[in-house]
Length: 329
Image 1: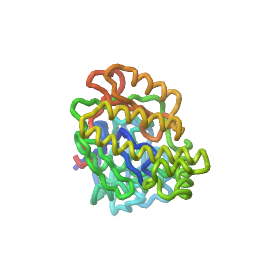
Image 2 (image 1 turned 90 degrees about the vertical axis):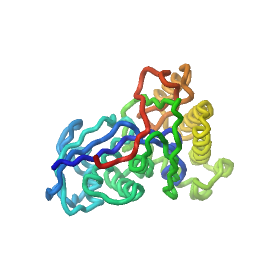
Image 3 (image 1 turned 30 degrees about the vertical axis):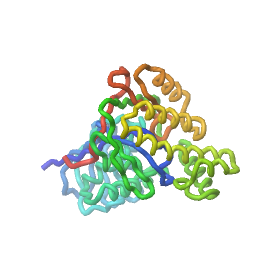
Image 4 (image 1 turned 45 degrees about the vertical axis):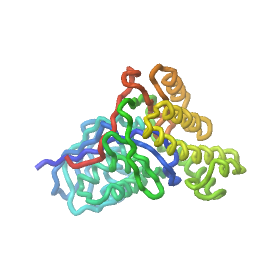
C-alpha cells in the first residue's frame, strides 16, 4: 500500500545569519511542500522525482552521500546514512517549493525522507538528524533553523526559535498581514561566502565570547573591522527578533515592517550578503503603498526577498501562509 509524507518549505521573516551562533530567528513554515509517495519493504532506497532529472537508487548504508548523483540525491543519501534504516522504500518525490530560491527545498526533502524511512521522535530530534544530513550532503556548516521550522511549524504562526536551547515559541501572524515572497536569483550556498561568514563569527566569538550573549556595544569593541561588522550585525539582529515578536503580538505591523527594513540594511552593509538586485527589489517593495517592510530572506547571495504587506497591496510574487510542520499524510 502506498504511503505519503509531506514537508513544507519555509521563509524567514527576521533573524538572518544568527542561527549558527545559537541566536534567535523567526521563520515560518509555508504552504508549499515536498511530498514523497512510497511503499516500504525494499532492500534499497529508490526514488524518482517528478521535478528533477535522474533517479536515486541507494543501498541502506551509502558510503559517501556527497558523491551521489543526481545532485538532489545527496540529501536523500545523507538522511539514509544518518538513520541506517533496516528496510528501504520505493517511490517518487514531487515539490512545489521553487528549487534554488532560498525557501529550503533541500531541508524539506531531508525531513520528508526521514519521515518516509520511519523516523519516530520529537520535532527537535528530527531537525537535528536532518541538519547533520545537510552537513554530510554539502559540507556547508548551516544552522538548524530550516529543519526545525519545517519539522515544528504551527499554522497561522511564525516560530521564534532559540538556536542554542532549541526552544521555540509560536508567534501569531496578524490576520490583516500578508506575507509575499519574490524570487530574485537562483542561488546555492555551496561555493558562496556563507562558510566564510561562519568563520568570521567564530573569530568574533574568540574575541568576545558567545555572540548570542553579547551586546552590540561589546561587538563594536572588536579590533578587526570586518569581524566587528559581522558581530554587530548578529548582536543587533538578535535584538530585532525579540522586538519583531513583540510587534506581531501587538498587531503593530508598521513597527514590524520597520524592523525588517533595518534587518535588510544590516545584512547589506554589515554582513554583506545581499546583492544589488535584492537591494533594488527591497527598495521597490518598500516604496509600494500598503507595504510595511521588506528584506532579503535566507542565506543571501541571491534567492528571495520577503515583504510584510496589506492584503492585495502586491500583485507580483508568491503569497504564502504559515502552515503546520511535516507530517505523514
